[in-house]
Image (tube, rainbow, N blue to C red; front, side, top):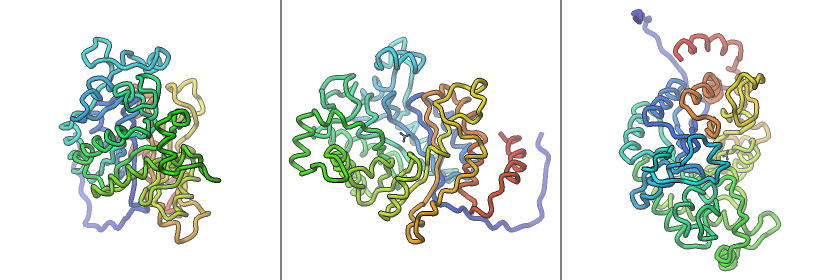
Amino acid sequence: SPKKISFPALRIEDWPRFAYRGAHLDCCRHFFTVEEIKSFIDLICMHKINNFHWHLTDDQGWRIEIKKYPRLTSFAAWRPFDKLNDWWVEGRTFCEQDDPRAVGGYYTQDDIREVVAYAAERHITIIPEIEMPGHSEEVLATYPELSCSGKPYVNADFCIGTEKTFEFLENVLFEVIDLFPSEYIHVGGDECPKKEWKRCAKCQALIAAQHLQADGRHTAEERLQSYFIKHAEQHLNQLGRQMIGWDETLEGGLAPNATVMSWRGEGGGMEAARQHHKVIMTPNTYLYFDYYQSADKAHEPEAIGGYLPLQHVYSYEPMPRQLKADEQPYIIGVQANLWTEYIPSFRQVEYMELPRMAALSEVQWCSPEQKDYNAFIKRLQQLVKVY
Ligand code: ACM
C-alpha cells in the first residue's frame, strides 16, 4: 500500500520552453478502444504534454462517426482481414460491419465527446486529423463518386475537379468542429501523389479555369493541391478555427494562415518559419516513435524501419540555428508521432512510446543548457517505477 509522505511548504517555479507539446497516435492502421485512448491520454498527461493529435482517417480505415455519411463507419471502418499485411496483399478491401470477418472499429460521436472531456480534465487539447486530399482510399472505396475514376479501389486521392469533393469535406469538417473545441484542426495534406489529377479531365479543367499552370517552382498539380488546401483553410477560418497541415502543404504555396507540421526532417519547418508561419517540429529523423529503439532488431517487435534510440531522441534540438531571431518564435512546438502499421496492440503502443516519451517531454520543456542526458537517465529510474 502507498506510504504516506509529506513535504515541507515549497514553491516550484517552472515553465515549458514550447507552448505546443504534442503526441500523435494513428488509430487507422490499427484501431484502439476508448479505454486505450484514455490510457494514452494518461501517459501524455504524466509527461506534461498538452496536445493529443488524434489521427482518425487514413487509407486503412475511417474511425470517426459522421452522421451525414454513415457508410464511413458501417463500411470504411472494417477490414475483412485480421492482419494488416494480409489486407495489403489481398486487395486492400473493406467489408460490412456485420461481416463475420470484420476487424476494425470506430468512435461514435458520444465516444469522442467522452474522450475530449477526459482530456480536457487533464488540460490536454485534442487535435483531430481528417486526411485530405491523399491517404483517402477508405473514403473512395465507399464513395467512389469522389474519385477521378469514379470506381472503388482504384484511387487513393480525392478528385479535386469534382464539386462533390468540396461538399463532402466541408460537411465532414462541420461535424468534426462540433465535436472538437480545439482551435487547430489538422487536414493532413501529406504524401498525395497527384498522378491521377494529370490524367483526369475534371482536375485539368479546374486547373485551366483557375489558371493554376506550372510555374518555375511548382507543378500545376501541386498548385491544384494548394488550391484545395486553401479552400479547406478558408472553410475552417470561417468557422473560427485554424488549420494545421503536414509540410507538403508548402508545395504549390502555403495557405495564408496555416500552421505546418514538419515531418520530412526540419527543412519544411524552416521554410514555413521563414514565411512567418507557425511550425510544429515533428521530424522523422528524431521523433518517429514507430522506428526501432534498439540496433538489435532481431529481438525487437517488427517495426517500420529506422533507428531512434532514447539518447538520440533526447538529443533533439528543435530550434534550427539557421533561423534568424525574428523567425525563431514561429517554432511553437514539438511533437512525436506514432504510426501503427506494425503496431497491432496497445501494449505495443506503450512499448514504442516508453521511455522515449520521457525524452520527448524534456525536449519540449527544457532549454538546451538545462538538458543533461545522464541526469535524465537517473530520474528515469523513478519514472520507470511509475510505468
Ligand atoms: C507522414 O508521416 N506521412 C506525415
